[in-house]
Image 1 (cartoon, rainbow, N blue to C red):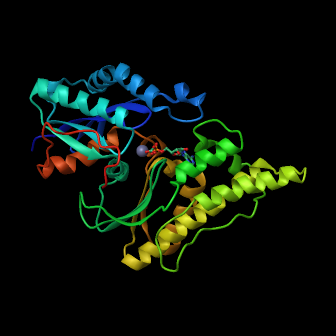
Image 2: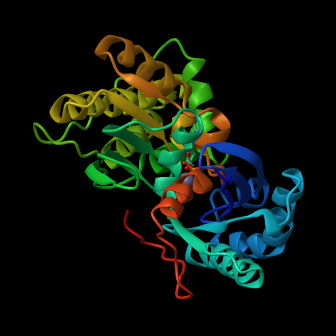
Image 3: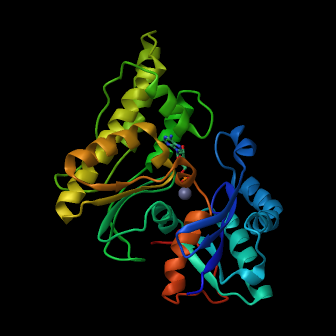
Length: 334
Ligand code: KG4
Ligand code: ZN
């Protein structure tokens, strides 16, 4: 049995990443160049700056991933790349770099959906077993996904407005915290003994959808009203109240989905999976509900190429290769 090695590339947002994955489950190397510092002073990711950094970095990062793995292109079986969703200019750089090296070395190309990648980060921890439910929480997505088998993704709940990471970043900005705000709010919330009471958006009875824009507005209004009255709101208590509301709804809807679909295998995915409060609460709930729960290590929660390589291996086995029309698709659906 030959070992299948895939070089994976990820450039959908503000990390230029490449990794070599063997047989879909073993990380041979993983390199991530973060652009965070360049975007910080703008309070968010600036697409033009992201593209420029990706152009400068992509070749170097691919080479580094191969060097770290002690491999050359001759040792590879395929090149995988995130084709969407994401920033169009950023995606195009990864897609074209992948196509170029694949063409030069006679390798097939595999296009990967970014969210499939986040879910498959869990495959690098423990081989996925089906059926499973994935709670996907990132800067651009908040979804409950039902998977009956490898490569099959049924979205059974989604946000109707802001993604949860987006809400974290906006609330952080309101509190004057630097970008990305998620980790900042997480730290601030953990340091507070008190929590401001904020609303929970459960939506209609039985709905597995989410909504976070109302909660975000509630935070802004709380600050605004206090200011008008000349009062001071403790930022820690506000962050803690926000985080409690988010976690209660995320976990509550996940419990509802698990019961509705009769599935007790759960995997957490996306950048917000790094949240300490959410990890703790899901672990507690898993013990109570009897779930088999997988949570990726922090390094696999935020954007990386290893997860793209893991998801790509499934497509490799299914023979689902891209042709030369492969393109970056900002709004790609899963
Ligand atoms: O998955 P990701 O790296 O990029 C997207 O695909 O969107 O997720 C980034 C998001 C950001 O909104 C960031 O604030 C959030 O994940 N995030 C967190 C934490 N770490 C990252 N949110 C809450 N708590 C954290 N510890
Ligand atoms: Zn992501």
